[in-house]
Image (cartoon, rainbow over all chains, first blue to last red; front, side, top):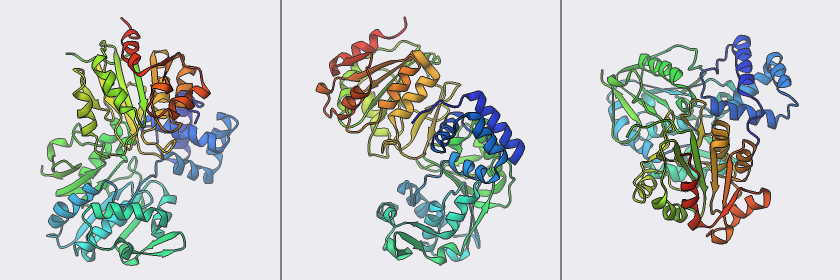
Length: 273
Length: 192
């Protein structure tokens, strides 16, 4: 793949257009990854020049949706990092179970694989009936996909292995029905999930949660934007609530770090201050 | 030791059969304070600490997993985390990316070769080792486009010759080196 067709100054122009025309602000995204994604889209959609890409984005609202979908990374899987889910299963859910009502926020949920994984954990812990999962993403198209609870059947072998490694004891296939090449997850899982758009860059806190899960989102943000999002999470988390990040993300260098304590080796912090 | 930002990077990419080469050359490698090594290895394990530890036994230089927002410092060896692509920002810090696999690989050697070339230009040296897929070739071409240096392990000394041979079929590198010539080459290429 050719990288470096679109120059940095051209990317600045493009990002300014987008925030002025549509209000989506990608200026504080990590530039290296963003640049690679924009160049990738430029190649896939066969634009003859940067000027044409710029014009298309400025004038075609539908194309902007595609742009947002393609430059944000939507690669995810169910029970990704099984030991993380094991920690949730064994340590975090028992603590959450003491609350009369459990509110969980999946920020940047993409196509929903992780939020359905959480619903399965809650069901197995007998907590799903008193839980509400808010699954949000900047990108309306991935949310449409997530709402359908349909995932490729070809992935189920991998997901089943992940599930077992996370400590799952049931037959994973009992959570979905196979329909041609798709696996349709059971409605009772979805019944407790609210899908909604939310932009971590520009939108505010909308509730208080006992657990916020935001994995492999912050790696795409620069330090200033990370700091802003950490404050948003801090505002949205109850005292003694938990914040779960991706395997390569850390709270360590942020301004809210003194109020949080990391639990074990996993990227889970508890708000103690 | 005070760490300074590296002005030269040596990126080593390898797949099947390359770990042994790296273990063999590491003890003989010296780095001056302006040069960093970045190692991108295809591997299955999702746990990174054993690899970093394994490499640490072979050198007195610090070996670290590359973490997002880390400044790339001279006299240090960085290892790309498994299952993430490793990129480099304009301020010479790392960033990681969990996007689609490239050449069936994550981390992709192509991506890090290209990232290094874009930021370090002619002060990039890219070394492609043994492996069983086509990753690395287009990255080496990018390094050439930015006037960096390219090195390919002599396929006859590679445990799996496909990857270096594929690169040789598509470009002419600055050097084709046997595994036991690589450490010496790295030591000679550094700015005084």
